[in-house]
Length: 366
Image (cartoon, rainbow, N blue to C red; front, side):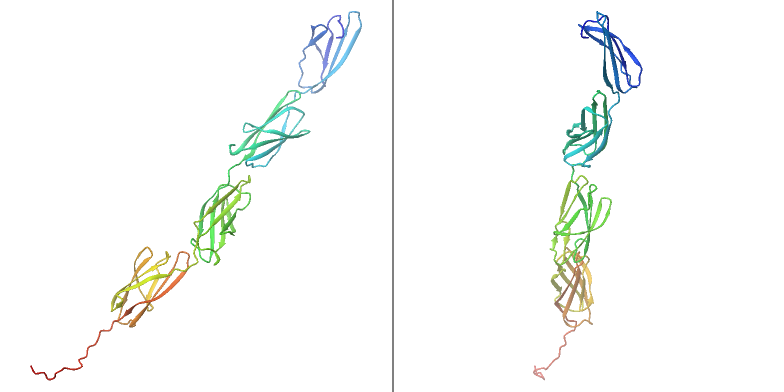
């Protein structure tokens, strides 16, 4: 009060839609008075404070003041996470609030995010994702106090953190090794990808053949221009968080060269009627024991040591006499076929004839 009063002033408060409520008043210090009023939550909005009093001379005075009643908790409405899933780097958390706020805080898995923008009731916070963050669904907690001190909060788990690059494994090739034919390359991916991965063989692209879940099959056509030997295979792709994964492999073999045969020998080198042993060496591993013939007639497979083979041929009286042709035909693991013709021995099944041309002296006298 501006001066000493004749008794305590009269104070009443009327909340929005409520009845007039008198407020008990007591002298504080000097001409200052204080009173305690309990706000009724049912009546939100503008409240009216009426004060009146009489000084010691009997003059009356009054005053009116206003304050706002707010007992409603602030509400948060999540708008988006950008990007989601999120890899290492910044992720923005955008949301709206139902009223003006005194303070707002955002935490991701218990770690603070920083306010980056605010426009009216819209807030954007930025969180720095690192490789140390827990992978998978993250708990995003938003909390704050409105201007009346009411607190509100929400928690959301739809933000996905993924800082791990996708991995490629379980490669299979059919056929392997491969010649001038299509080859099917299949492999598995550790997670869902943003788009189909890129696969190259010796720097040339393979075509997607099929996809089943996270397993892919590609088709590559081997041509004569491909380098022989272990092929340089490379596959790469981005996961949904845009982490890039890549894998190289060299266990796919390209083989365009037919097998050849060397060290062809026959024991005996001049064969009479009976068994002749044929030995030779293949230049590489074969799909199966090769076919061997002598003058167009079949032989019998005996044994194999590494790429060295032994066959048996039964020489008969019906065989053509003289130099014999050994034909070897084989197929390597890439299905290349090779043929070798050799004349490493002769066949002689005819017994020699002996004629007495004369006796001298004849007659003979001892």
